[in-house]
Length: 221
Ligand SMILES: Nc1nc2c(ncn2[C@@H]2O[C@H](COP(=O)(O)OP(=O)(O)O)[C@@H](O)[C@H]2O)c(=O)[nH]1
Ligand SMILES: [Mg+2]
Image (cartoon, rainbow, N blue to C red; front, top):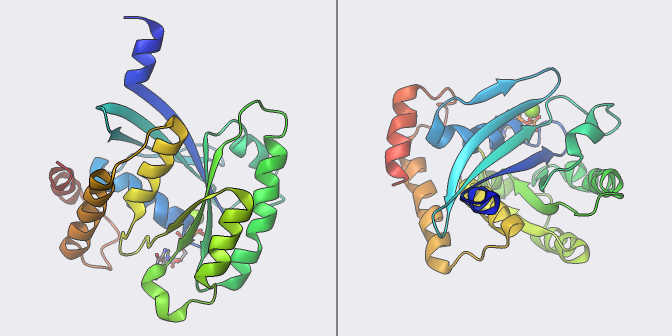
């Protein structure tokens, strides 16, 4: 088997999650990563990341390294190392917190600056989190869409709390990075899986035990 064949069977992609404190970055990462693998939490000095393997159309296994920024802020010293060379960036804000949306300009500039000299630019997606709190929304959807259009970003609305569209978001970002088009059926399938999981899990059940994880693996098949 040639190198390129090997590579095409199991790619690793790095995706970093950035945005203001309390917009839900850690919740998103844990919601996504723990749903089928159980706890895969790795803690390193100043950097936390999760590993999760997903399968894209064509039986392509992709391992996503999802980096959670922890407590770092825009001026943080480690931030450029954290962002450098990443293939995907989720720019996350809280739809009920206007400031968290406004600050994305700065986060986005930071991403562009860090990757200025690199040959390839990461795929960046704008992620409006907490859509379970739609009634408290302060960032209008058209503002979100405009930001995406102006900057050529992917666009998602998710809820880390209910799980709504979380898997779909990561799956589509991975597919974009690899240049794979998902068809309608594949998109609907991942949405359906998420919905089934909302029904199965109480909202306040944040600590998933291994039994939960196993049943979630089953629900993905
Ligand atoms: N209602 C709601 N609350 C959320 C959601 N995501 C995160 N939170 C809450 O927002 C707070 C901050 O979340 P956290 O993941 O720690 O944010 P981080 O600082 O960006 O990592 C916590 O109280 C979470 O429970 C969501 O989708 N909906
Ligand atoms: Mg956090």
